[in-house]
Amino acid sequence: MTQHLLFKDIDEPRLTTLEVYRRRGGYAASERALAMEPAAVLAELNASGLRGRGGAGFPMGRKASFLPKGDMPKYLVCNADESEPGTFKDRELMQKTPHTLIEGIAITAYAVGANRSYIYIRGEYELQADILEAALEEAKAAGLVGDRILGSGFSLELWVHRGAGAYICGEETALLDSLEGKRGNPRLKPPFPANQGLYQGPTLINNVETLATVPHIIAMGGEEYARIGTETSTGTKLVSISGNVRRPGNYEIELGTPSRELIYDLAGGPPPGRDVKLWFPGGSSSPVLTKDDLDLAYDFDTMAKAGTMLGSGAIIVVDDSNSVVDVALKVAKFYRHESCGKCTPCREGTNWTVKMIERIRSGEATPMDLDIMASVQTNIIGHCLCVLGDAMAMPIGSMIEKFRPEFEEYIEARRREADLGSNEPLETPLQVLQGAR
Ligand SMILES: Cc1cc2nc3c(=O)[nH]c(=O)nc-3n(C[C@H](O)[C@H](O)[C@H](O)COP(=O)(O)O)c2cc1C
Ligand code: SF4
Image (cartoon, rainbow, N blue to C red; front, side, top):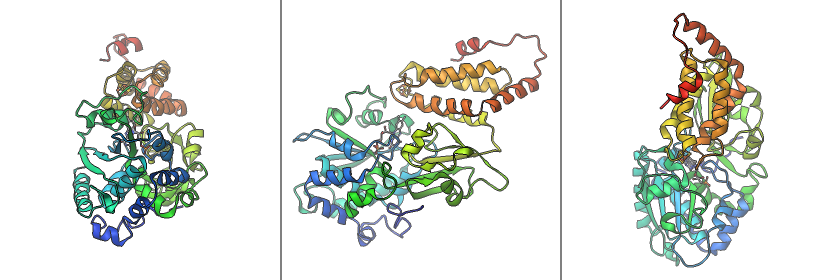
């Protein structure tokens, strides 16, 4: 179940220093990669079957192959924004083994011919940014980053860039705008970053965990790596397990492990006397699953077949002491706050959803409001410029679908409690929406 590559030495004292990292075999993969042709390094990444760990699960080698060949300025950007609620795995990697990320970046940049690279780290991760900067200085001084790395003909400039704490800047094109010094708004795609990314140049963007896995792939060989996990979800994955569990934390698991083992055996399951009510398998953006889904294998395709997604690998467990209405409100409020406001379905739909859930909680809603709320979610999905709108609509839609009787009971109970004795006519749902902003 647990298999350690990324977390093999994670609790080794002073692993953040170059001395200890090298003693544990660090930067041997860089030497190995630089002795190969870039195309051969790319072939290893393709053979590994590694899928992006930032959310979408797109094959990393394939995305790297999209960058045009030839002599032109190309960029590698590491997405260290890690803002998806429930996700805290990149933080641990950067804090405890920053050189693994730096090494992964150097190897990947070599494979795609990028000579400039940025780590875009969320503003709140001050400690991790300081640690990364210190590690980068050491790596530069040792000739592992910079001009003619390890005596080869390959040079790489690498910068750590701190964001300002906006969830939307984790979306890859908003991240690029933010890096360029603009307001972080998503761009229309196409063009995709592989063709026109940072400063209009070909750009590869990958998540911290994705890039930190690269040295391990080069060390063991792509085919060997692909033997871990399932056929279409290869390798190990860091999962951040939080919520109502006894041992919350980051765990490195082999993809394809039954979800029950992750939630119960690793994270200890809900507190005594409590049962799992629902769980988010891939951060707060993923449609929820229930206790009936605990035996599903935890991998990209099984999650997709179950109508949800593995996402960033953040499992949030909600036990039966919680109301689904409260969970829905928390999710909706987060996305309302983080919507960049650029497109109407997301800007208005997130706000309407919050207002409708608040109406349910104040005892003013009728079961008809549930249908309206569900239809608002349907009208958001697929109609936005980026998937932030969907990221709210999918989990909220799934909660209404799977917990409809609980929503209805809640509505009835709150209506009774509100004691509608007053003669004031209730606002209709339409009036609520019109007055929502
Ligand atoms: C609203 C939104 C927020 C995102 N936040 C992150 C993030 O914090 N970290 C991340 O790696 N990817 C995030 N992504 C996914 C990125 O757009 C992109 O797919 C990812 O960085 C690609 O790396 P990967 O292929 O290694 O997964 C986000 C996407 C969206 C739509
Ligand atoms: S979906 Fe939301 S966050 Fe994305 S561009 Fe539209 S308004 Fe902005």
